[in-house]
Figure 1 (cartoon, one colour):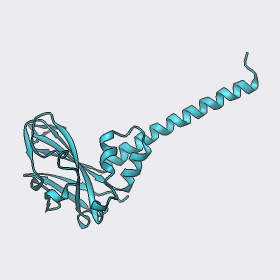
Figure 2 (figure 1 turned 120 degrees about the vertical axis):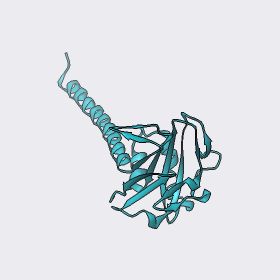
Figure 3 (figure 1 turned 120 degrees about the horizontal axis):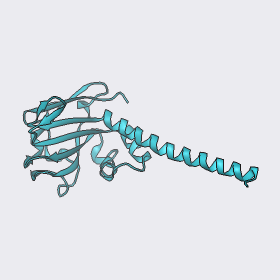
Figure 4 (figure 1 turned 30 degrees about the vertical axis):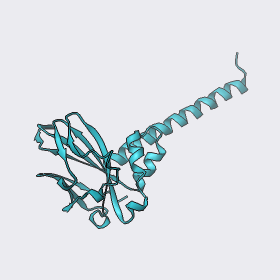
Amino acid sequence: MLNKKSFLTIILACVLVFALCGGAVAAQGDLEKVLNDRVATLYVEGQPLGNMIIGARAKLEFIYVDGVLVRAVKDDERAPSWLEWHVNKYGSDEAKGKKLFILRVETFKPFTLMPEMIAVNGFQLKEENILTRKEFAPLGELPSSFKGAMVLAVPGDLVKPDKKVRFSCGGDEAVWVVPKK
């Protein structure tokens, strides 16, 4: 039989465990929401068919990196390692005065990706806009079923809160609105 003090200790421990676990779930949910607000998806050569995209050569996800995303990643112990790795460019010397995007690439068919194929609000990327080391940047001839990511830096005046941003690759385009916060 438990005495009153032991019973209260067990209840307090359960409440503490629940609070800690609930906080982790809330943080994960926060990161997912923050990410959802900061992603534009472009399918190269893809054709919409209802809720699906068919025939795409590749999927390009442009993930806006700002202080809100960086904090959400650092606060979430379950954040994916690729995201933790790439948000570290935020606030670096090479990113001063620029806006950052993580470009995630997933190929469905062989695909050649070069910086000059990508434009952000009409600004055509060059090699110097890629902050990821050249050895790790998913550029050149990529095989099917490839996944990779790199960090892009674009001029700061191209990305303003609550304004549209157009991403293009070849003739394909995606439009995204910058979050206010």
